[in-house]
Amino acid sequence: MAVDTRKAEILKLHDRAAEKSEALRVAENMISKSAQKFDEFLRSSDAAAHEAIHKADEAARVAQEKAAAVQQLRQKLESAKARAASNSEKVEEYSRYRAFLEHITPHDWLKDQEGKSRESVQKLKQQWVQAQLQQQQLQYATDLEGIDSELKEKLKELEKKPRDSKANAALRKDMEEKAEKRKRQLTGKLKSVAELEELFESEKLALTGSHLYFQDPQEPLRLFRELEEENLFLIQTAHEHAIVRVTRRSTQYLKELEAMEKRFAGTRAEMNARLEGLEAVITELQEQLKQQHRTCKQYREVLALQEQESDVFVSLQKLTAHVAAIHAACNFDTLCSDLVCCPVQSEEGSVDCLRMLEQIEARLDSHLAALAKHEVGSPPGKGQGKATTRESPSRKVSSTAFKE
Image 1: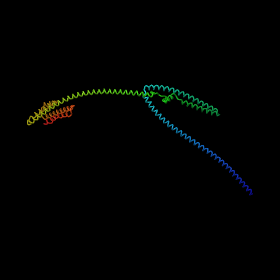
Image 2: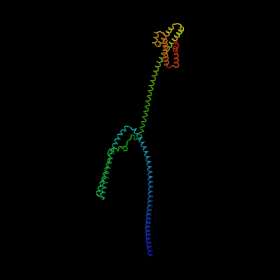
Image 3: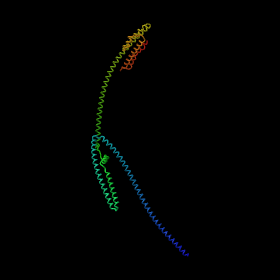
Image 4: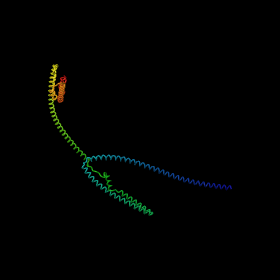
């Protein structure tokens, strides 16, 4: 019994050992498979790492090449910009030269060239439009043939493939519609004659070029020399004409000056004659005033002797008569005639006598002022002395003779 039990236990242990060995074998197989997978993973990771390194190196090389290419392109761009700026400056300078040459070009030649240029441009436009139309038609026909041939090839390929008839018909219809659509697009892209003419007009400056009047660089220099010589001749001629005009004007001015001197001499002689006449009149008036002063002095003496007598009126009447005579000599007739006709009876007669003396004095002063004004050529001091000496008698008459 114990032996059986032992055997059973031994069998159980054997079974367990077999199970353990089987599990160990399975585990070893799994470990070996895992090791193989890990080795494969290591190998694949090494290959991926090598490939990544290779790709990174390749990318770095490509990046360096691109950077070098970009640097070269930048350098080329800078040089192109510099050349473009230089070319634009040259174009601007040449445009100024061209404008200058066109400015000095004869207008008749420019008009002729404009007519010829219009005719040549018209002919060139017609030729260009015809050429573009022909080229457009050829290209359109070629494109249509290409579309038709492509459609035929696709239809042949479609017939070779084993498909349903309905599907083939649908595909065939779709292909034909696409071909028709492409043909309509090509037809819409065709340009008309008006569009081609507009395109030519927009590019006319690039298609045509105008000729210049000056073909030789020495021609403007020769023209400038001729113009310079002509200008010098015109300047010399204008200078000579100016000298002639100035000479004529100077001669005319001299003649006018001589005529003015003659007129001035005649006017001066006339004024001197008038001045002499006025001086004679003034001298005569001064003599008359002196005579009147003497007469007044005599009358004052007589009146002084006859203060007690009653015939003072008679003396006053005589004095008034003498003053009236002087007044009449000075062309004051109205008051003089009144005084002669009406004897002095009151203080009004003495007032009238004083008024006559004031008028005589004013007339004498006006003559003296006229004499001083017309004394041309005489020293200023001399004329002023005469005026003062001639003024004193009238002042004496007004101040002393009739205060009594």
